[in-house]
Length: 104
Length: 153
Image (tube, rainbow over all chains, first blue to last red; front, top):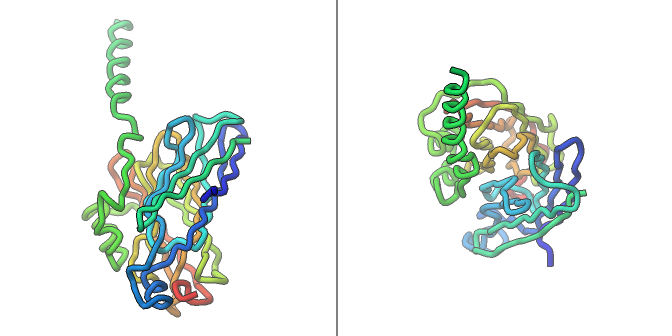
């Protein structure tokens, strides 16, 4: 099942992307409040977006992004209509969240 | 004469091509773990970049004046600076670093994200540092109010 919903549009040489990751993004405080154990915190650490094997967006992230975080970003110089953007995220527990979207 | 200049320019370009910006892309959580545990903005900036001078120009941070919910505050960062990375900090949450973007030759610095901001009663300032390819550090700020507690929401 796709962990990322990705929408991408190419216009005037620029690809604009809107991506949403499906993730609880529980902070240490929330984990402590809900379960009594801070170690139950789980949030995304790192995300890459690639097109044709090249990285077009890359972030290292904290516990402070929203639940099911939404990102928007743009890139240029790569990617044609029909190309796929692949996004891969790794979370604190080591799980991988993946998704792909087509550039329209 | 012209030919010699042309050859030296080509060599220079070839040297640059060997070290593309994307090679510098890093997982900052692994590379600089203390950035993510620093409690204050200044400590986090120091952990990330060292004791650097921040030049207040070229970085635009946009948020609503008042965020309706602290659980999902929309933040936009724009810059035309030729950058290596962009780091976002805030002074509301238990730790200060929110996200670090790696910038490469394809990147356009116009990033939208949604973050949690713990309402502390006082206005919250988001600080964004852009590390330029020129080795300098540029900063932009944005102060806003948050209606409800974010991390608890």
